[in-house]
Length: 285
Image 1 (tube, rainbow, N blue to C red):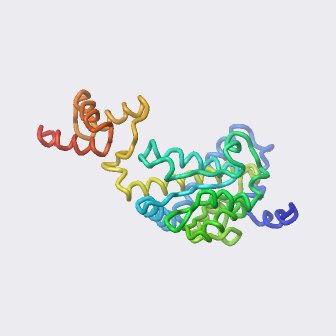
Image 2: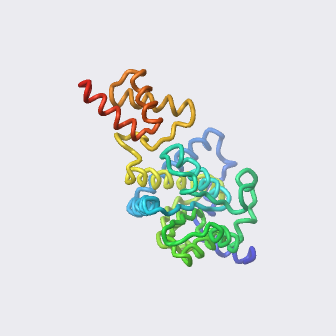
Image 3: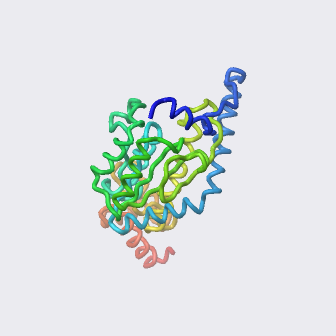
């Protein structure tokens, strides 16, 4: 596919339209307009809530069934995929190899743009093939335009291998070229800087990813009493958060909370069980 073919695909996408001349706005007006546009775009996510819940259910089913979740994209979408995957272990205690993030162009693309990498449908297919995916797995592609060849290739290959597939995009489904078993299309409208989908589009994609992983974790029992019981306290900050959580939820003194966490091996779910027993026996709850 050459740039003339891409030109035709882009001409109808709302994220490519110019609606505002930034040169006519003051810096303060740009801040206000940017905030307002992001807020409006985020609220549009609600109309896709049923599909988001369905994807979250797939997310939980995949991990419960021993499968892997692969999040992938190019450019900003790929960086969002990697960031989301990286957070699953410290936040919910999900093993690092169970939720994987991929970006077109490989790891070097995380820190330096490799825009041409997104044009390789073959690259997407290769990335999925190397993981050895199968029917237990779930592939979630992120593409603001809904046409990124790397994402299209990855989803196509994943379906050939029997995996479930989903696409998160910020253009109307009627203009989206990539097919998937589940497509979440949130039409964010124009970008303040035309075509710069690191802005509204990226913000909306991030919120959708947050919703999917959060709901999926709730389904899996990784959240109790509204707390991260799957959290792995690997840093001093997370250990302090774990102690504070037990103190607040079970009305414990700091020393008791720390002792319970030590007894549980800093396993939050086990610590919750022990804390409840302690609080019950002491008449605190």
